[in-house]
Every structure is written in C-alpha cells, then in structure tokens.
Image (tube, rainbow, N blue to C red; front, top):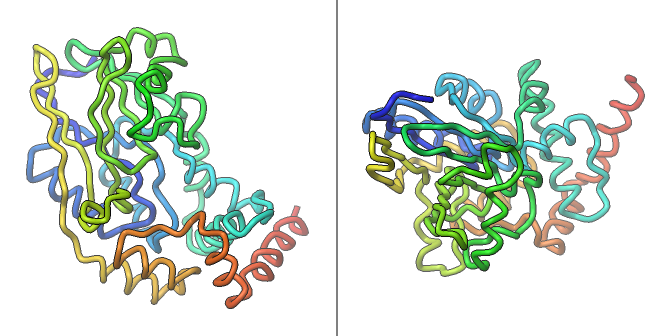
Length: 290
C-alpha cells in the first residue's frame, strides 16, 4: 500500500513524441506529482526513440504495463511482423527505424513489462491495463461501447476482481465512466496522439494525461490535463533522423489525423519510398545473423 496524499500522474500513448512527454513531465512536476504510472505505447510512429526512453527512465514510473505498440516494437525489431498488408509493413518499417536507433537492452526491458498490474493506494485497489487485461489490442473498450464491455477490465489477476477502479488507455480518449456495477473506469487520454471523431474536438492536439489525487477517503480529484508543446521540435527530429512515412507524420502533427489503417494511402507511400524492399532486407539480415 502506498502512503496517502498521493498525486499520481497517469500517462500513456506517447507514440514517440519526446517533446510531448517532456511537456507532460514538466506540467506534472509543477502540479506536485508524487508518483507516475505508465499505461503503455511508448514508441512509434513518432521519431523519438532514445530521447523518449531517457526521459521515461528519468520519470521512473512505479507502475508500467505493456501496450499493443510496445508489442509491435518488440516483434518488429526482431523482424517478426510479416508485411501481409500495408499497415503491417508500416509497423515493420517503423520498427526497423527503432532498431537502427535504440540503445542496447531497451527492447528486452520492454518485453518484460506485464499486460496488467494492480496497486492499492489509500482505500482503493486499482487495476491497470493498456486495454483488456489479457489483450492489448482491439476496440472492445472504445469509449461509446456498452458498459458490459468495461466489466472485463475487472478480470485477470485476483486483486483485479475486487478492485474499485480500473485504468486503461489504448483508445486515445480521456474518459470517466462506470462498469455495470458502477465501479469506476478511467482513461488518461494520449500524450502523443489524442483522438476524436468530432473534428472540432480533434483540433485540440495538446498532450493529455491524468493527475489522480488520492487521500484517506478515496479519490480527492481527477484532473484531465491538456499540455501545449511545440510539435515542430518533433517534426525537426523526424526530418533529421529520416523517419519513415514522414508525410503521414506531418499530417498527424497538423490535424491529429492518424492514417495507420488507411491501407490505400499507406501502400502508396510505401511504394514511393521502396519500404517493402528495405524491410525485406532488414528481415533477411536478421535471419542470416542467427
């Protein structure tokens, strides 16, 4: 059990934005954060690799869970993402970029992150997972889905079944809602890629995180933070490091639009830059080195 009077900065879905993560950390420090929890998806498609990792280590979250993009990094740097469709090539080629830059031992450390953790703080037990406790991917927990879907967050580890609060990430939406038995479900939003299908709301692409204030009675406050940062710093890094799919990253920075599953557009960009050939050569080199 942690001490009472905690201010926990909960963040997720950094997606390679070193500048966004730095802004979140600075804001959380200013507001007196006493602890940090990370809910998955640290790298890709943004350009930050070692820059993100070094800052992440400085933040030193006491709780970490693994996300689906963390799995893409882990599998991709090992050449284990077959390019069966354009989006899979996109993941693989971005992972090849990570492999070319990442410090030794980082990916191995990420592979040890669990899918789910539970933590007692004050009166409440929190269950934390990137998405479902046993599945880091999929749209089962999209914010507008039925409450029954969110009951599944309170499964997995024994402590999770009696938890009062579930925290997840993945959908890049800030959220506070309830399971069918009215247990609390929270989502901190996304540091690097806030999403909303309403374009008036999507226009706010500031870095998101959640400051959870806990006292002896329970949760004293939930502060959903939007932190401004200079996206051009990430863009300059992307240009300097020759980030793959640079034009798609520019679209994301300008509008918040993410083209990960726009198969036609991703295929077009991949063909223009010969990414299939580059990734095939990368995989072949890995296989020959075994």
